[in-house]
Length: 313
Ligand code: TXA
Ligand code: MG
Image (cartoon, rainbow, N blue to C red; front, side):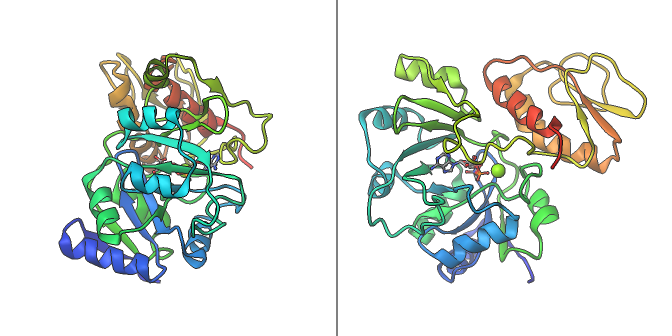
């Protein structure tokens, strides 16, 4: 299959929307990472998403919608959902809520779970595409399963070219980490740290979030241990440099690349995946990474780095 490169202009949105209506797959930018979009109502499209990524079928997808009103068509809304959505949508927050009956969504999207993950993204290109298409878009990150997530159109091209219909190029993703996922089908629970700091959510709720524990098989099926893996092995919390290693630094250290020389976690988040892609292209044998403080976006960065360093299957 030839993958079309589309510009983020009216012609590009129209073409992308036609491809989605025809059951095809379009990668598009969001404020977090690039998503691999398909029509969430079409079983064939959703099946093709799993196929293109090599993603296990038990791992459900996030549905992207244009507004709270559209989200309410698909999930049982609640006061807590309303509070979080009114503050943080559009933005890097995904809510997991009970799925309504007879929504018309493909059962593959939820992997047959009784809940659905939804979010309203905040990126002009994602919003223009959702408006032009006029329906729900299922979109995991646009990378082969288990690999580093894409924050540039060129990352998507490297990972999925020839396997998807089109890439809508909207430049770099600003946040650079996937959305934070909060489960609201019980006590508010952090299912995945991400681009919205946990502290902000807890302040909005006035309570602390429960944290998903890996004993819970159904809570976040995608939180498999090895993930976000560059080609080279990764060593974390490196305060020295060993033979064969290149350093991905943070703060004032001498390094091959530096996530944020000034120690800014927002900057480090936006650089993380691109720098991991770069360290791979530079041919690092082992990627050593400086310690990252474990608060704010640092918590999501450390979550991704732990998975990048985990034993590979
Ligand atoms: O920022 C993001 O969230 C990006 C952009 C494209 O929106 N998307 C993304 O999708 O990161 P993906 O598929 O790479 O990660 C989705 C995560 C997976 O860990 C999946 O298991 C979890 O969401 N998930 C989806 N539906 C769920 C559900 N009903 N219950 C619990 N977890 C769910
Ligand atoms: Mg992903």
